[in-house]
Image (cartoon, rainbow, N blue to C red):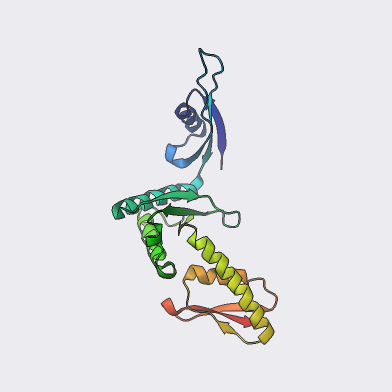
Length: 212
């Protein structure tokens, strides 16, 4: 992704110069204000504002669109929450996350994340009608619920893998969503003594840990 850093009298002026240099629109970039600048006194000690502008690329543009969709839905629901875009992790460079936080955020999680998954499904359904399907992946999280859940599932997978490797008997986990099953599979993909497989249909689909 191309990036440029520009200084000007104001932040907005610096942004405009950056957009012209990159040849892109405002909704195609991420703006970081490096310095707000200083007005000085009688012309002395003044300092220009400085911004760093980075092209988002296709995945980043979709993340911006996803945030707009989420904000519109949250506004209709009249919840006291706000959303931000969380940049991709190195292991998933095309996956942005829309993070929702606020006083009413608990209402968006639901039992075992069911409400959160439904909200994310609606978000992606609306996005799919706005453009082609070949795009970066966007996920939704509320108050870091999915991060905590992923850590918990990873720890669970390792504990059960140890149990299976010692006993020599397979262990079926409770039915999980596709994303949570993927976490289990990934956690144990390189385990030397166990392997995993999914079975079942629909909401009853589950992961079983088996000895190699």
